[in-house]
Image (tube, rainbow, N blue to C red; front, side, top):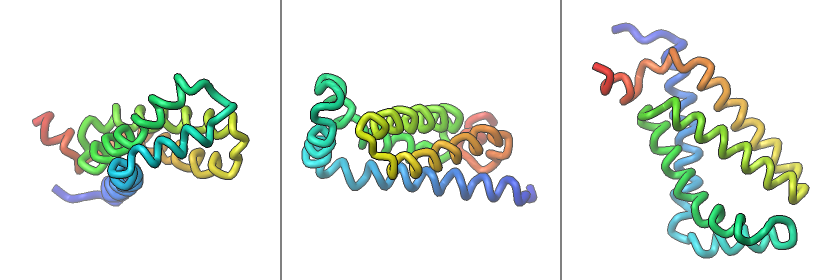
Length: 133
């Protein structure tokens, strides 16, 4: 089977975004309480602690899982949807804090999730395809 440029570029972009998400989770999980504490402190006075605290503790695991799924190309459609929804939540949080600089990066991620979901038919090199056979 010959790989097309479209399939190769899709796989490389999917793995790149996956690695970014995986890396976020990977470095935050070992220092979870420090990461979550900083996030909780950063939202002090903006959102209820009952919302921020569970999100802060779950975020690294969600990032890690989304990243791992995208690197492998496993449940790709659902991982892309989860990633895009996560970006929406992060953008909302940054808007509440008026952290406009971070929103630019999150919008970039959101756009890449859109591209990957839009061209999901090019996802030829993924565990998803092995499972379909």
